[in-house]
Length: 537
Image (cartoon, rainbow, N blue to C red; front, side, top):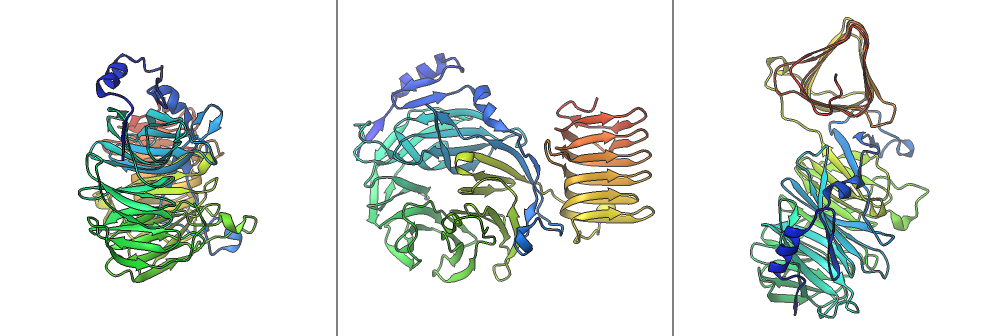
């Protein structure tokens, strides 16, 4: 084993403190770009807004007609970075607090990788704070722990004579969205380090053929290791390590000795394909390629459930319809199914798993990571798509007490002289309000909303509407009123016709409008609110 210090710590800080943020730091094979403004131009609002789900049980996988209780908003798309005319592809994502860390590599024989750091304090406006480009290294996986990034990588040994093997563990300190130390390389056997996971006391790293899993302490000193062929992924949880081999299936290991506790045989996988594992509530989730996802008990390896890929488009090659990645948090399972998209399931009851549907996103899905309200989807050369789960806690307003959730058609109408009230989380498609409508919780409307004459609509909680530059329109018509209490994000156009009222109830209200705003003579906006985009003037 050999450690490679790319920059002396003193030299790094000297260069860093003197560097103009618009001038990247070049040091051998690594270029650090701190020009956040320039980097963030890759963040686009194309297709942003409320996202529909495709019903896997409907003919030809059409957009489902029933309302769903999973409101999802695509907040931005991020173009993949380019270097010397070569476009990179996202490989892995980790999230910690207000920051997300994204790794990249390049297909084929070229060694070229990158790491982006995102500030997601304002999820509706993510910022790329810093970037590292590796001109002789592919980055397979990334994980953050206690102020340090851990990277699983493959290094071109023909260009980097200071590493002893292509497979490497790379570490670097980070703080406040910046790299704050040198990069340290530690070589291990194999042609590529495929994945890594931090245990209570070590970092576990896997490499492909010839495959090993090795443990490294805080100073990257090697400890126990074990040879397992064709390792793709590793995860730590329930006080055990689990690794995935493309040849021999899942191996559940002791995290200190690496002795095998359980083996779960699986079908031989396609060589070299990306796969991931996740652990939640004592269960292991496995991406199994063409066979979808498997759920197994960590205690004894017993199969709990198999989830098939829900949609298999007829015009797509079978080899492109594979589960590349699984991610589970807060009882939501996301499966990245390649050209078959991202499927979402509720796994709160493993005896009765509920399928929400398939995200209506562009591009092939290679990796997905969901944590709390964030969802990051890597679409290969298409870069990243960043989504927010627009849930909110129930309102304490007395008018919201005892309300039931909505179930019914996604096209929703409240007729004149009619009153309807609901709570919870709901996604609707087209809405027309002629009477009185109260919603408490999280409401998302995908396409169009009309509050007609003498209509009253009140949303108490979180409200998301429309899609950016997709001809979606929210119309408050003459002698009608839309009342908002909480946070509102409008991606479509907002039109207040003569005699219309937009009223904000109570305090601490925010509204963000990305579309066009029209306020006709005689319309009014009243109440206390913060207009984040300055559109309501």
